[in-house]
Image (cartoon, rainbow, N blue to C red; front, side, top):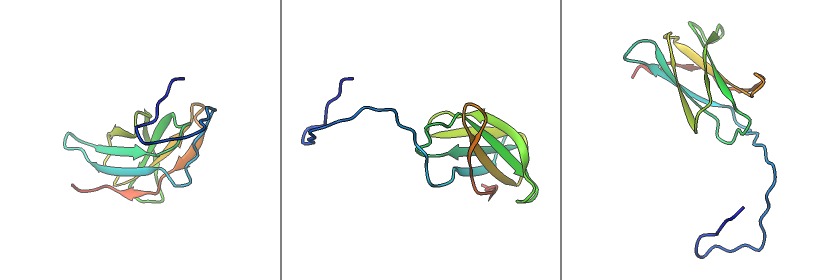
Length: 112
């Protein structure tokens, strides 16, 4: 490892070690109407290092959501296009084995 502090920053020690992030908050989700049809869902969970895929849940009522798609995690915020208009959506964050790490709150689609 080769590192350098910015000018003016000082430290007398640095550590390298395996680290796993487990956020204390829930994953974040926003859903909006996709002009091409269906919906676009945006999912993120800052600090979750074991996140591998997102599963999108949707339904006509907040208490009756069903799986409607999934997408591999990519970058800070993952954009997922879904062929449904909900209007209620949530996401689950899953690890590489498909285990659910966390679930967002349920949101109603933004009408744009």
